[in-house]
Length: 123
Image (tube, rainbow, N blue to C red; front, side, top):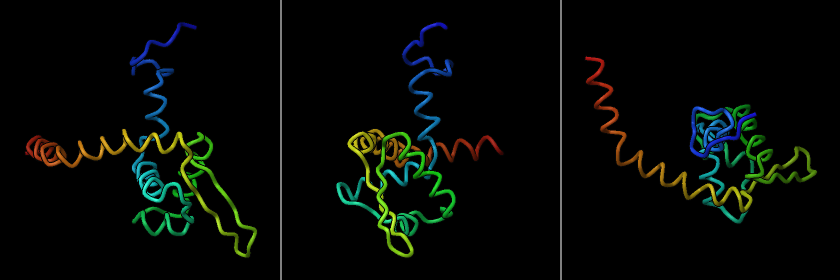
């Protein structure tokens, strides 16, 4: 096996490509933002769903499972009926908020131009 070159997005083993495969969805970005705003406090599953318009219960569950599996979030269950499930970012997850915030800033500054270019291409 050949070693992975840093920044080689064409290599499936590239760390950047692997990260984008994991966090490149809008739901992951939204969940990280909601959890980062609450940090270091926890957020209940129902509150996350309320703060993420359009996310289904299943999609949120899958997203949070991925964040937890990747060590970006922690899950705590209260043994009540029904169970109360809480999430919070780990230190690793909190460190992801800075680059995601930079991406949001770029989008706010540039998406109008992207949309204009897209509309012009369709004419």
